[in-house]
Length: 192
Length: 127
Ligand SMILES: [Zn+2]
Image 1 (tube, rainbow over the protein chains, first blue to last red):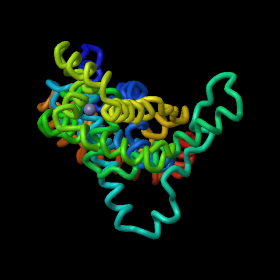
Image 2: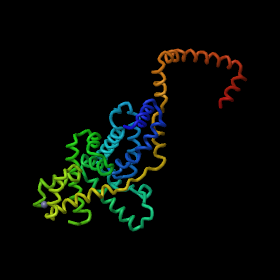
Image 3: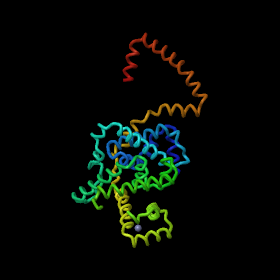
Image 4: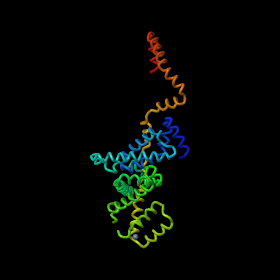
């Protein structure tokens, strides 16, 4: 871990909230991306991201500084997202009110400079389709796939975040990938 | 699916995980050149993950960090703890001195209470 981060964490342990603010700035968009793709709803993802940072602050004494801070933080974010999904699964009525991709509104999607409206629409539709496919993956495959393809993390980092052996991460990614492939060809583009 | 055998699927996974050796890559790509079925399968795998990679990374609102900070517990407890662990003797003195100073303040207040004018003046300054 880099030295500036070590210094920040020392300060945070002493209760320095400005030091914590620096870490939030550094990691907030990664944490948000993980939560967003895990739960598929921008508002829920923002709430979960907040919760993840607050939990990290409150439990900073449990952080083992031999590991990367991001590993520990992403673990908190992934676990909170999985807990949220389980709660939501048990609450069918809520699930009906909050469809998967609602909340991915234009204010959270940064449109590319100069992109044509039709392109924007196509992109939005594609994103919704992809998000729907992620949502259909079982939790344990979903976490591995999101960490790999949204955060672009190495298999080793994913294994540390999920606290499972690298071999298991690979299996989950392979199965998740195969599931995505199957579902996308049958429902995505109708290429089958 | 006849040809998409375990052997080639596992090679595809190795290549996609960027863990294949040059030799393994060669075996796979030579096969893909002759087998349409495996070629389609491999391209579909690549395409699905490519779609994931291309998802936008939306930005959080600018006020996010502030909003997190506002929800943190006040750091007074930490401040006292930190100070206390550095100066244990002083903390003890401070803790013992606290009730004493309360007595002092209390008696002062009483003195001021007898002098109504002073009390009004003091509280006026405070607000
Ligand atoms: Zn083949």
